[in-house]
Image (cartoon, rainbow over the protein chains, first blue to last red):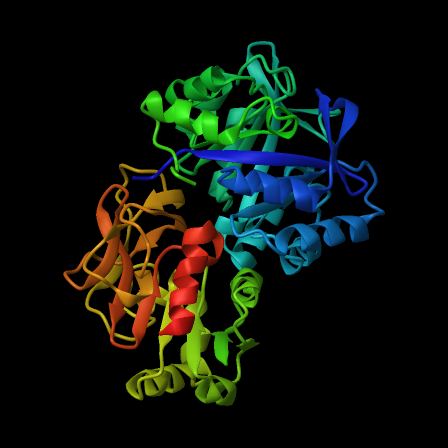
Length: 253
Length: 196
């Protein structure tokens, strides 16, 4: 039986893992290679590394971190942040990523999705969408959540899937870092609009939140960062609770 | 020496890295001579069945079939396993190796496609490739087409339908999932292949 995935996300700035609330007030959470290995050991089904360094002038640091993290990681590894061209994507794959996540660049150049998918396969292309509630719909933001685009998140997810995305990584900006629970309305709307897997992100605080996002949000996977870094939620214990709630998870892991 | 077949499609780093981690001597190569000279061959692959076109064009197909007929162990991974069958509905004009019967087909519309994530393995009998792997162990998949179920399947998984997850006959092995991305279970499977 296909299981629901629990994905540990590492937000990285200048080569270090950090965590903030709504992309602000960043705190140091460690070395990416060490964090990734530890999450995998503790039962994470997948690792995502997002480079949130504001400038694009420091690609060397990212590629070095990807290489170091990929070396001894034998679960799926996705890398995002600042990937704007097929050459950027190729460099990240070459450094050891299995999938790339694209966000702002896909919004400004939607053809990029198809270009990367046709060379590396759709399974390697994750389109990340940062969405914020606004006037009764969910609006897409780019540039690390700084710039509204007036695009509707559900329509954009549908377009991204049609253009060849293999998965959607959907972050609720309203919930990100708050531990107030996933935005199940947002996640279920997108999950029903596309036929590719949807990874829910933003708001994880307790096992109950994960149960809700799988049951009510119809998520295929759920991603969290802060609760795993600081040991608030133990992934093995979380999976035990999900199992008790009737949600299939990889176990033992 | 294990040759990892590079036919110009996709990303072979992960497969090489896993064998490196196991201490196996591997070479990533698209050269027919290097493939012919190797002790074992790994045929990896992700993406669309049409990427296998180059395998036929460069004469690699004959070299692979020749190697198989002389008893050399071959492991197909994902698209590489699908190639062992007659072909795939994904790209009808490209012939598979026809070592196993049937054509690969799309998942039913009742489930999301691609099939992405960790799914459990139902192991049939005692395949050498899956030696020491517990029944219902999980492996990581990412694919939109799947090989038909058959009596000779070494393992199967279920997603909308039951499909062949692993094949094994004499020196020919195949897995639909990605052992290089399946944690300790996957590394144990690759180690078994190193030791056959």
